[in-house]
Amino acid sequence: MKGDDCGRALGAYRILFYALLLVVSLARLGSTCKVAEIPLALWQPVGIFEVWHLAPLSASSWNALVLLFLVTTVLSMLGLLSFLSMLLAGLSGFVTLNYSQCFGGGTHAVQIVAIMLLLWPWTGAGHFLSLDGLIWKRTHPDFQPQHYGQGIWMGRFLLVMAFTLAGI
Image (cartoon, rainbow, N blue to C red; front, side):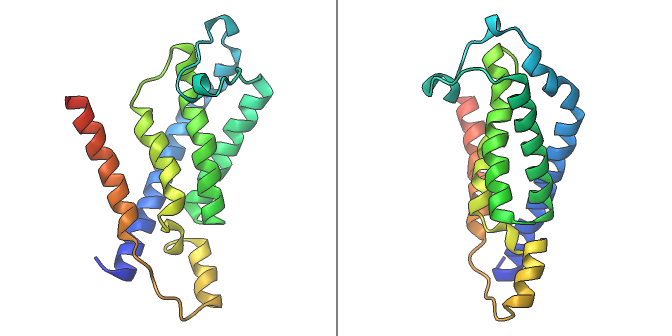
């Protein structure tokens, strides 16, 4: 694929990824909000929480983080303020998806999604099939598409590495 075709494919992947993430997140919202109610005696930080010596979040902080994640996920799916919304969805999603593991819950399967969330802002996926793309094309009619294949290859590489490392 070249130029516009690859950009449209990446835009479609962005919509699908964030739509599925939103559906799964909303389906788990009841149990997600209860994470803040888990006794602090069960807190055993892992990953970034252990490395950076992060303390458990208060219930209000947790709920604000989940709300930020949901709002930025919707904005990312729509492609509105694409880079910023995907960046904030990535950062809040990375913390949200990994937080339950500090209480002994969760699985490692969320790691692929969490890492992919951090990669999306740099793929250029907001240029096509997005509200930003519509606005940009009206104000910059001579816009020439860039190389959008890198974003697709980053996602493919991430999936291949997950399956490769699981088999080692």
